[in-house]
Length: 294
Image (cartoon, rainbow, N blue to C red; front, side, top):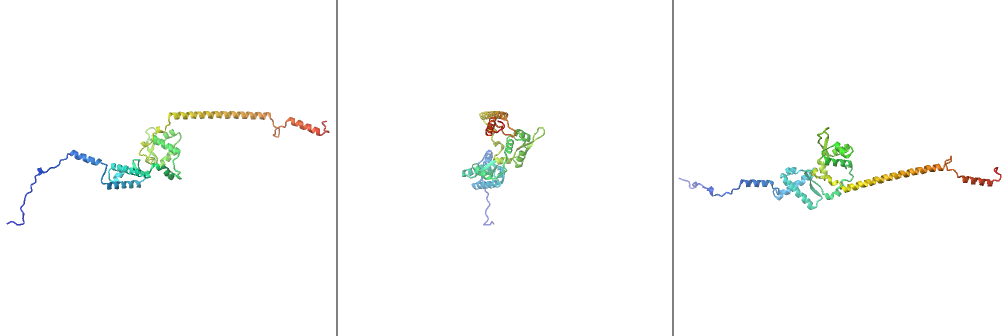
């Protein structure tokens, strides 16, 4: 006898062939995944991008040296391409708002620095009372290293025409140059090059950003005018020297002639004219009639 509450078992039959399944080619799935990896237009919602920008601002502001995009990507946990895009957006926002600072890409990283338009104010503030600026010889030596690196100490001295021992030591102490290798030639001279600190001070990403030397070379017409001016100046100087020598010789000859024509007496004063002596003698004789000369 069966229980009244017991229900008979029934088999559920499903027709699988009647179910329609959309088939997607494997190539399309691979292309979609690649496009998702390369997409840097956004990595989430707007709130997450805003948080990433705030994190980038905080990290860059807290550091002294430029922060590389790869380091920022590891800290914020986003792709490097996304970091570069967000930094570009931040830089554009600061420029649009007219801020007094910019987010600049220098020495392979990002850092905050003052706006170029405000340079005179910053210079007035920073250089007030400063005495640690590089001297002219040090700047010349640094320019030679920047454009000719790697370069040896002897080559620097040959270009400048003087010894660079003191100025090179100053640049090494400041951290603007460093030893980058050895010359494979005889003597194995030490070769020097610029450092990352040098790029930071100049606000450049790489040494390739240096202006070409051709921009500082004057035109041939200017060089010719300078040479002509130097020749004229030298000729005038020679003529003036000859005239001074001739005048000096004439003055010496005149002084010699005067000393011969006008002898001096033993006391060192000029001799009295003979006419005055005769007149004085006549006057004495006229006043004294008992003179023995009568």
